[in-house]
Length: 117
Image (cartoon, rainbow, N blue to C red; front, side, top):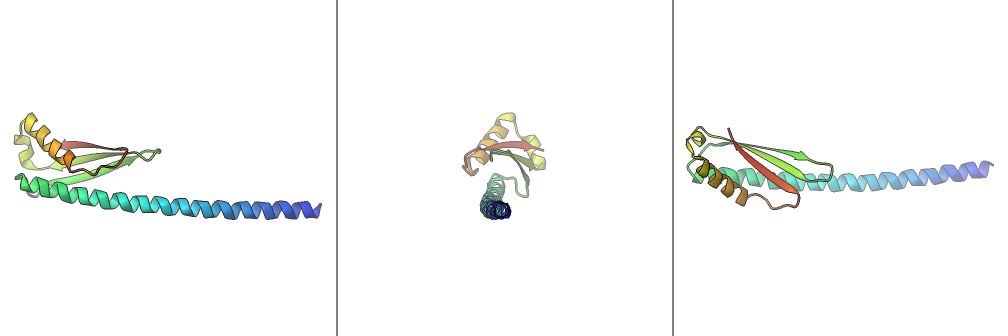
């Protein structure tokens, strides 16, 4: 009887070690993915700032937020702040948003929504 208990305890210990090892690999993978997206997001904000500055909207405020779904997809909201944005016609706003979307990073399952404030 004691032998069965020891065998079960040993099997449970091995299972726990294997589970902990696989969880550690998953955490490392998620951390690497986060670093990758952080770099892409920083670069996108810099590129948007350059594009807006080159388009006559220097010192524009840019706020990028994201929602990460369980399946890993991301929905980005880009809030753009500049006093002169309100002088743009609807067509000019659409053109500017098209330029901003054209420089966004192309990753699967990422959507971008731009808003002027």
